[in-house]
Amino acid sequence: MYVIENIGNQVGYEALSPTSATGFTSSIINPTSGVYKGMSAKAVLLGVETNMIRFRMDGTDATADNGMPLPANNFYTIIGAENIKNFSCIDTAVGASSVKVLPFF
Image 1 (spheres, rainbow, N blue to C red):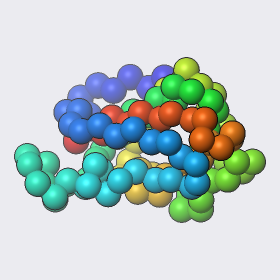
Image 2 (image 1 turned 180 degrees about the horizontal axis):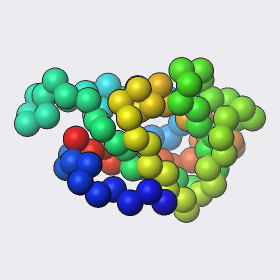
Image 3 (image 1 turned 135 degrees about the vertical axis):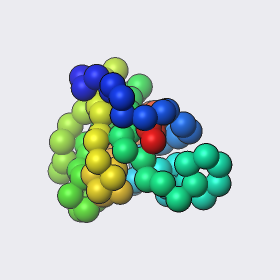
Image 4 (image 1 turned 90 degrees about the vertical axis):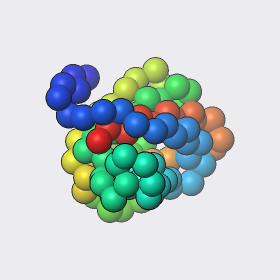
């Protein structure tokens, strides 16, 4: 796991249940109010609590059988505004995945 050091402050939280291709909510990674208004998240810590997901960051939607697998009980750090913007994930067993998101600014 990448150690987040001097990358900024963790602000916000999102919980995803990606039954279809799902990205981050725009207002979570590009706030429209508050201290980080108008900024883009520099990094996102992604945690998969239940059931494996597949993800992509190339602007193409992940599918249940296409994308990088990330098993349950694992974390992944996404660095870079473009990677965060292009992120897409989906669960591999419909309705079974729980994903937690912590953005950093």
